[in-house]
Image 1 (cartoon, rainbow, N blue to C red):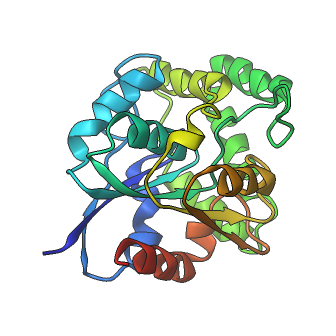
Image 2 (tube, rainbow, N blue to C red):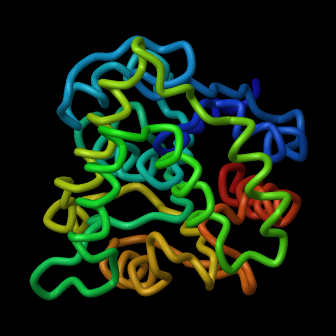
Amino acid sequence: MSRDLVLLHGWGLSSTVWKPLTATLSGTFTLHTPDLPGHGSAASVGPSLHEWADALLPHIPEGAVLVGWSLGAQLALHLAQQAPERVARLVLIGSSPCFVQADNWPAALPASTLDAFRQDFDTAPDTTQRRFVALQSLGDSARKAVAATLTDSLTPADDARRTALADGLRLLAETDLRAIVPTIRQPVRLLHGSEDKLMPAAAAEWLADTLPDARLTVFGQCGHAPFLSRPEECATLIEGFALD
């Protein structure tokens, strides 16, 4: 019987962003790639992390390995704490418990930077999404290819999705999961790019030190999406961890 592997993508995209990774995974998994609320084909559910997590819960079989990237990683952490019977193991990619700088938390974006993204999204959503893609691919040795895949996977900021996308930016601005990190009991595998400009590697190092059972791999010359620029290496690490 194959093991269930659930992959949660990041803000502004759809589950199609996982194709380079899933194409390299072995056939030993049953793959689940739900769209985040208000992204891809999924309906909007509201502005809170709890509402988003509740909407994703039906897509997570009991005992699954949960892979989360960026905002998806924050949702994965929340789900691991709130529904531990569903989540046997966690793989967190480009992850951080808190997306913006705060007291005793320098390993993040300045609050003013994300505030500007939110304001710009209200007036020029398409341009803001393209800037976000550029930031995610910055510093990656495969920058052009990563940016192209991210662009192809964008959720259009049309009338049906715009509110949910704005809610997602709000979640990134307001979510702080540092308090729950020491309570996560599942084994965790952390994958991070050394040149990540959205969620600095120092955030992943903090997670590796604070989670009760975690191991970190940092990919050199990679930005925020190492699973796109190093899909084979990421797949090998995920498989070894998930099937251990």
